[in-house]
Image (cartoon, rainbow, N blue to C red; front, side, top):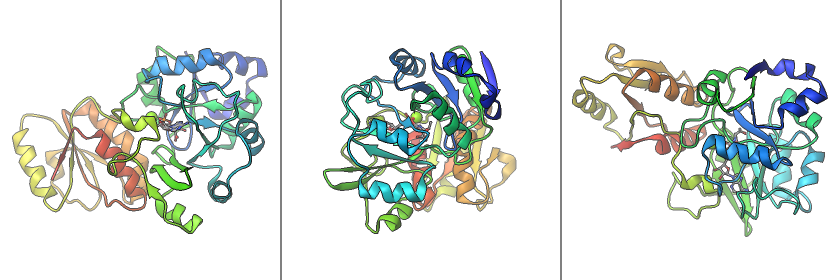
Length: 334
Ligand code: TXA
Ligand code: MG
């Protein structure tokens, strides 16, 4: 097992890079760490599913290094709406649904998908690496299926040290939540997963109101198979407190579990007695809270028996935070 800094990747020779990418490699992105394989190497792609314990019908997001590379893997032209979003948000944390070219491996597409989801990561160094490989990288988040996504290299190493040969360390992820996923299906514009590029930003860019089509939202038609599965769950129970009575409900639950170590994902406006909890400060603004969310869950999970968190307003990036929290929660208390 080897850990190298993203800055040092450019010093690796072509031969070394190609050698490493015969099996899955951990890569840093602006959203979360990914477990990556070349999309033309089916053994490495199968390795991703095996290492993660990922259901084989759950397809992988494809990461490209350039628009030329995109055109090699999609059928036809870039749809107008996609072009508008690409101009505005790429490179960055927005994944888009495209029609795939026939030669793309079925393993990337979860064996039966009609679409491929593609994004161009923000980091120029990562894009350079992809361009040197001259083929896109498929990369789901680098956690075991069902666990919180990793936003620091330490999270990944503690989870996957025995399974992966190369870990590329890019420091802390700047966004901290997985990419927003947008697609058009039967002329219907849909948000398939909320992320740090918000529905408000998409609506404004497209001058339209797109449909919210993700599970934590309501009953939806499943387009991303990942929505069916358990997600983001810490080993210990996580209680999500929603509604006006959150403070009273937290006090009740704290009394009920008085012999347990209770961790609190604290928001700066909460004003609770901090001596009574093991505190993780999420940050001052909602963007900081998004960036720190998974680190907070993973950190408290290793220090406490139960994790408490209060709701966020479901707008802007708060919508993505609540999507993750609702899926992570063992109980939602109102
Ligand atoms: O920010 C991200 O997108 C991160 C980093 C590593 O880039 N990746 C990531 O991948 O979050 P993953 O596998 O954890 O989540 C991918 C989601 C899943 O819900 C999956 O079902 C959906 O995207 N997805 C991928 N390809 C798809 C496809 N062809 N059609 C429909 N949904 C797809
Ligand atoms: Mg994931």
